[in-house]
Length: 504
Ligand code: ZN
Image (cartoon, rainbow, N blue to C red; front, side, top):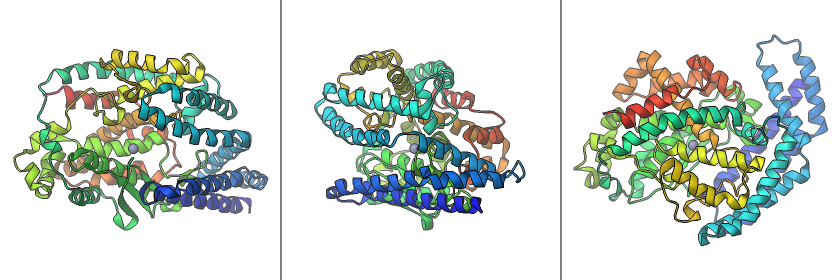
């Protein structure tokens, strides 16, 4: 039985990828600094084993046999989609030269070191040769993956299958046109008091209240953990062990509070994938060699943004849950009302830094990066011209002067990590979150009543049924069509931004 044997091979790859995630989680939470070099070797070795297993002739032969067996199955059988995804990944791994994979990995390590140095000294020239090398390698990689209209399409497809430069150009046009007047209206409002958000918030209490809210959203701590890190993330090693992380600032309640809401959303997705998909292609990104149950990066981000922004940052949530915060931090929040809290956490401020941007201006930062990446990939901008073009773009889109490259083109880790193509998934996540949330609220009275009274189980059940349980067995666009009757559509997102930021 080739199909059975093939599934066993994929289970082996899944085990390797889950183990890889586990040592990555450790390196970002617990590992002493001294472990960096040897951990890097371990990560490279496990990645290579996973890739070699997929690219092996034996896997290729089993795949052909499995396809023959599956030919007799009914058209609706999931085995067809399973084999389609496995074939796609196997063919890509057999096509991309091992030399290129190694070159990309080695440049990544050096580019990252150069970027850290360049950012510390605000010297773009230190990073610029490494960025040029990264772009060249990414271009080679895109050529190996294959593309037709634009080389960047191949890279976008790794993170958000189905999206292209052309589709993003349309989406971004609609978003820019919709966001600009809302931003103008938001900036014309009187600024709310935000001083209480930066009072004393002891870390152990922040951790405790974070756990309380994660549980309130439905995150299962018997299959999860909340730990401390520098750059927060969620990561899973099957749905039975899904971990979230956050960072604490004792003089600012926002990063950890909204960070935990965000990572909880990611965690809920992973914890609720159909158990039947464990150790299968439907819980593994075989192309990106990453154990994950979410169907795309954008779909994943939609769940984090839904819980962070549509639930956690909503007026109703603040009214219902501010009491918990006030009881936890009586000294810092005694004189604050739920309404003042809501206004404080929905304050709009143009920022130079993407990671500090508010909900309304975040996509402006993303769109700029995506356009730079596309231009670097097709050669319409040279690496040395990026800092100047960045200043010009920030002035044009946000009206801000960029005083140095540290707060400009050197601020993100993505380019030094070779993650070209991933930025668009943040904005796709925002759009998809609004579309799913609006649909759930419009069509399901139970969801509405729950959100109105602080019971989030009906919303979680709605999402579990339509999004989470499917894992990677249904593509993002199909998830949206089935759940909302439409493909990705920015209308609900823009309506949400208008209501929240340009309403009363
Ligand atoms: Zn996220």
